[in-house]
Length: 422
Image 1 (cartoon, rainbow, N blue to C red):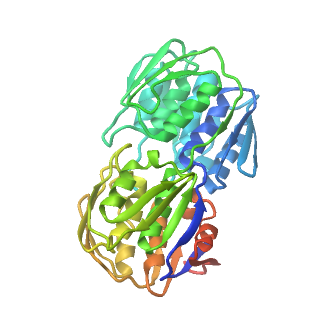
Image 2 (spheres, rainbow, N blue to C red):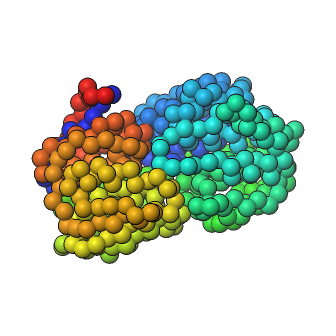
């Protein structure tokens, strides 16, 4: 197991290229199971989650090969079972449920794992599959589906915390081969859902409304191979934007899509961070002392829960009281106690994190609990005086491509080391 050692106090300066979106890559790779023909996906980030998904496709019988930033998938003959040993490592693996059910008429997929950030049930996935006519049962830790032929109908997919991104993806993929028209109401509007729809359309699917709360899918008899380039990762871009502001630096994000980051950029400007486009680059730098803010996470296009932890770290430097409210996952404040170890004056009250700033952070040994908490602790380490050691950074490698190399290129003093601790 590795840890990341950070010597804080340096401003980030320079340019960083934003990688392809992890949250688009996983369902799009799964969508290749819908056809026996070859699919090529480009701008794929080199991440642990992508490697896991490649192994899952291979275990199902598909030919799947990662080469640089491209993955080639050819699923001529595939099985219906996705075993627990692979699925437990990554929640995104559940997105094979829809493609397998649609193409084979059956699926046996282990209930997924992933980050420990609170309850993340897949009840809406199952509701969607049942609505399409599949018989669904959960036995022995596996989801079983069976249907001679899926049939389109109107489905409402929003739940207690709002729309489900992977649930929308699963139902949309299954509906492409269903008989008739499927109308998904309460659909997730995330750019990654629209990117999946674009790939499916390139395969021959008929989809309207992706990126809006209502998606209409008209089923077709079959899909063919296609090539596709992933959108840039808006969460990675937001993380580097926050890191630039936190260190008082100036960073150009190459390839970022500001139109996918409106809520984050709006809050950054509100607290005193300058953001502007320069051709294919997007420049981020603080314009003066940071101001406090109130932030509430919401489904897209609201402020993303995946940037909440990073923004909480940044707000420790704002002059005043900030309140961050988490409305998506009930256990996504596990980074708070670690920030407090570094000197942050922050405490949790129900779904709220209350931050009294500005705080002078000092380096410490901290433990990463999940992917985005890891990023927040790295940002805190960059701001802190002295040496910070972030343990369990395998979380980082699930969602950030070569983050230590990218930070080093921007002037940060970071390195990996073996963690000999428990």
